[in-house]
Amino acid sequence: MEIEKTNRMNALFEFYSTLLTEKQMNYIELYYGDDLSLGEIAEEYGVSRQAVYDNIKRTEKLLETYEKKLHLYSNYIVREEMIEVIKEKITNDPVDKEEINDLLDKIQEIEED
Image 1 (cartoon, rainbow, N blue to C red):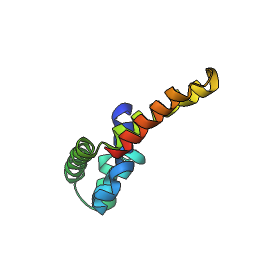
Image 2 (cartoon, rainbow, N blue to C red; image 1 turned 135 degrees about the horizontal axis):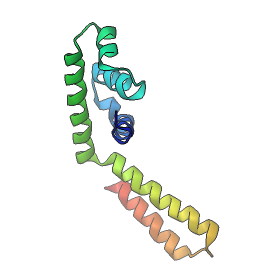
Image 3 (cartoon, one colour; image 1 turned 45 degrees about the vertical axis):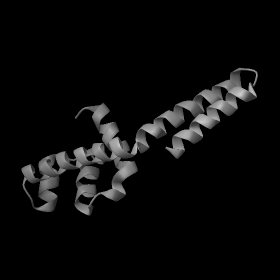
Image 4 (cartoon, helix red, strand yellow; image 1 turned 90 degrees about the horizontal axis):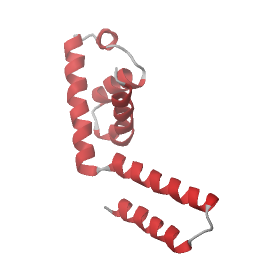
């Protein structure tokens, strides 16, 4: 399994898991979080590998759709990057209060979108 996709699905799952059904949550958590195979999940739930595969693929699309509409994950990433810039500036540079305030305003704007 591709690590980048796994990390993205785990992140999207953290943000949107409450919007999923219990079965969707369980399958995604077992597949991406616990690294179980389709066969292992199928055996645990008494269904076919194909049923598990189809459910996971539909849930992946659903998570991506939520992200396209709500932007919770991408906004989180942007905020984290801005916070890192602020921390670096505070640590390394003489503090430019105006620049720090501008960055904080941008972070606030992201949260309001």
